[in-house]
Image 1 (cartoon, one colour):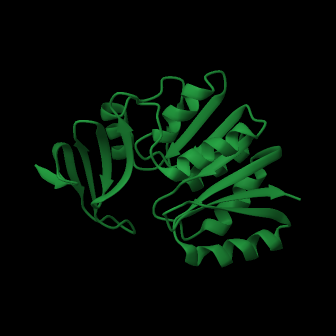
Image 2 (cartoon, one colour):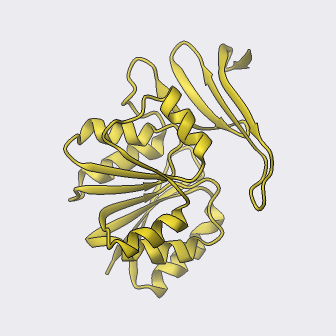
Amino acid sequence: MEQSNNETQAILYWRRLPAHQAQPELSIQVLQDHGCRYLLLNGQRQGQMQLQNPAAVTYPHLKLLLQLLESLCWRHLLQLGLGAGEFSRAVTSRWPERQLSTVEQNAIIVEVYQQFFLPVKTEQLLCTTAQQFCLQALAKQLCYEVIFVDLYPWPADWAWLLHQLMQLQSPPGVILLNLPAPEFLPLVQSFANKVNYRLQIFEVEGYLNKILQLRAE
């Protein structure tokens, strides 16, 4: 058992993946207390689900994202990065008539999501890298009104990835980024200027990460 915030948490799942090629060692845990179930990667919470209300959102950045989606015109949303599926459950609960496609490269995280976090039946869930998905989607001429990038860790080839995602946008679509650390912000600002995209920055109260919105001028 683990202690967190003075509450006992049961360990439902724990697996350690050894380092492989360029990928570092990864520890995956699923913990549960009386109210929530949590996904932890290397000891850090990456997602959670309220047991009594699985479609509810807890993290402030996801609440902000849902507010942004309310003001956008969209039918098909692409999400890069799955976590515990908190965003997936919230989006499909609020807009059941719309389409959600999610890309997650780690097969174990997909397996854990499907076993412990009430997977969304209408969600198109693809287990592949964001980079491979982009190449395949471009070849099929797929397009999306909203693209949400929530990758952990932040990819080293993020600029290349954003270039590919821009080609997958349905005009006038937007790209939303959960930027994990402030040191990346000047780089993304410079990138947006070079490609003539309008960049809006939304602060997440109490957190270092920011939500960025990219839209073609």
